[in-house]
Image 1 (cartoon, rainbow, N blue to C red):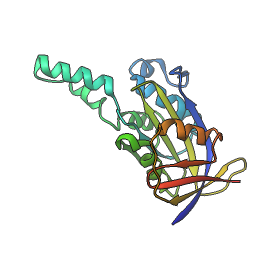
Image 2 (image 1 turned 60 degrees about the horizontal axis):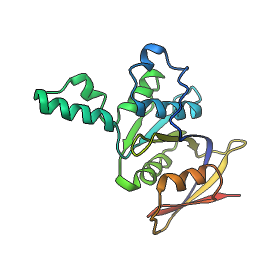
Image 3 (image 1 turned 60 degrees about the vertical axis):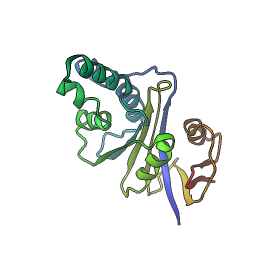
Length: 197
């Protein structure tokens, strides 16, 4: 099975520095570090239209979960508000709410294959989709890409083919090199992405 699609826009953040001036200050203050880095890259790919969203994070709201576990140990209860903002889909759900997006969204975590599994989920959509990966462990980093099935001027045509690959290095670094066009292939354990020239 080979599937072709197009990547229209990409945004990569590896230093943790974010420009969130597009979000009102009152909302911005309440965002976690994970939400901030995610929003920064998603917004660079967002075209102010309804779009499907797929968010992938291996560790999710790691810092918030630590606080909740300590709170439970010391007080034998947790704040419902803190809990609701620590669930895995909180980041993408909040982006959807802030921007009044009515399309569907999904959040994925799949261990060391979180990026490749999340991306596979994103390309199964028929409509335009923004795929975002973000984590704060071991460091703050995120990337997003807007993709779809139809050709637009300036887009990259990519083909996915089902293959079995041995991948023993950093999935984030390999995917970023693919997005930045340093590499024309991205290998995952169960598929290969190739940029078509």
